[in-house]
Length: 580
Ligand code: FES
Image 1 (cartoon, rainbow, N blue to C red):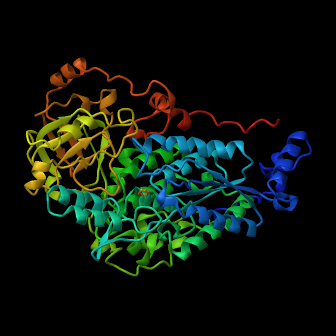
Image 2 (cartoon, rainbow, N blue to C red):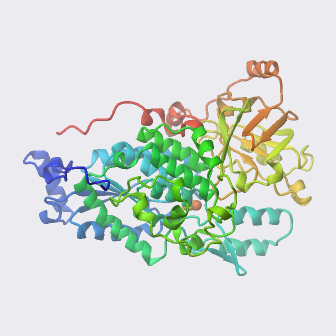
């Protein structure tokens, strides 16, 4: 039986929107007359489900430029299937522009999504996102509202190009920035890289946070099959948009909701996929938050358990060689998932009413250098690892596949930066007491300290070491790093320094021991010394006295909890709006 087969089909009397449009009272008079005011006729809405399209288009988000056109394609599908589309713009969370980080606003978009759906006459939702935090934010809000929901991913942009070489978003920026600082390329070369690295609309086209989270949306069951891998400018992307519009109308009549799709098994599928694709470390935080909204108990330890037996089979930067455009031509996510075979629960439900297994069973890999077989895995265990120890009692995350294997087991003296500004002021100074064996520490960059865990976790290698040819060293912080980054960067240390986690107590010269194989991270000082330092520690002054930042600081949870706001994740269901 498919996901919708066991439920009674809804009728117009069951729809939320009937309370706005289909009753004979003064309020409904107002709703109808104001809809007529917009030029619609009664036939446009009468007896039809209202589909809210939450669109994160903005002039400042280049990853979503095409959403202005795509939204019309989504609407076309909704009209064709007998629905009434209403576009509702929402905060765009433009990763390249928003300071200090879009992550500070992920939960704001999640609230906005939830409250748009609650306060307006929505019977179903189409979510349009892709740029890093937009996908998890939209899904978090929609999961809580639990109306039939389909996700339209923005899709990756085309490959970058410089002198005939492919360029990958982020990954090649860091690479050529290091070469510029080392004096190996010219300012003119750098300008040309700048002009060639982002050639079309669409999201970053490495396996960064956007590609990872769009794939997570698909494997969790929220998109049409294959939707997440289609390059944004491809005409298949337009067709996917209108088909998603058509499908959401049926989903409303079938009453196919997020709670019918999301289970502990579907989250295991997502974690398995994340590991096999060498996806972004950010996905750990986002999946924990999504699971929290779905009422599924997902822990950091589950990531480690799954990581151990999942091979990495996506040869895509930053952990591999190719880009998302190549991944699509190689068969895209359906072929990739099919290759994972029995590592996935194929009975998981999806928005098209079929199981995940049905959706992927005929998908083939067309380029085995991009999606490699399990027997030829790039790494025998998954792309991410969770480490714990006295420096990170509640865990920290590292991407071993993007790190130099020589550093997987490493002990070195700490070079401590109290915050980002301290790091930026001193990292390139000739008198910085640092060697290639040092461990760079960045404090106060976590959920409260950043605030919002900015992507500062890939601390730059000091200039004097770059000139010696050093390209990687162990770096530890409570920040995140871009999914397009690479290096031996231990991230998301919990609890964070700003609230007095052990990271706050590290001093210059302390020995730090990282052992990825053993999954440990320890500060080599005695317990007594740790107690003494803790007693002397003083909490930094609050960063915000008012506004969203102050609200955020009051309610934000730590990285191992997904950084959701406690008031959004916990508590009883919010009732439907009163009728008046
Ligand atoms: Fe939007 Fe990378 S900047 S996805």
